[in-house]
Length: 165
Image (cartoon, rainbow, N blue to C red; front, side, top):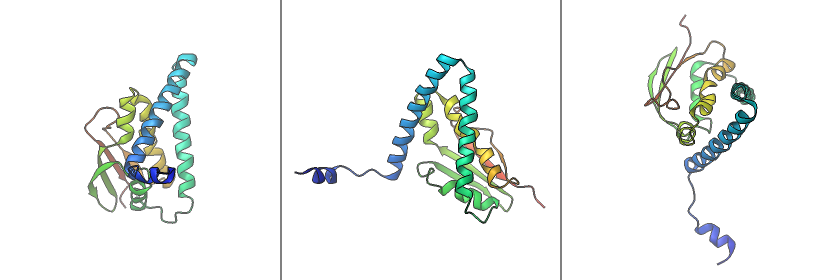
């Protein structure tokens, strides 16, 4: 058997399996890196990393939104739930009206893997970017959340809304 035949015999991984593996690797690498920085520079390193992470996510999102013409609430949530980093998330739509969309996330690989490596406070950087990303998409979109899987709740309750006319 040649190398190519061997590769073809390997079980193909689904996009969800690949996403989960990458998120797990990222959680471990990022957590260990921040552990070292905190040990060397103190707890302020965590605050600096949080700010840099959120700012980077927001800037990346801005670039991704650049070609999008429709900037309404529904377009944003549709983008959020199909942007390519949501394939292994599990959620239910609880409400979808003209001015309000509520999502109940039941599974988030980011929460699973950051909790698994013992650093949900680092994984929460990604949760904390949700509001700023929505605001960068459209400053009229508001975001609330009272529960997160990252912090051990049984679900995340995302509420995206605009003020009614």
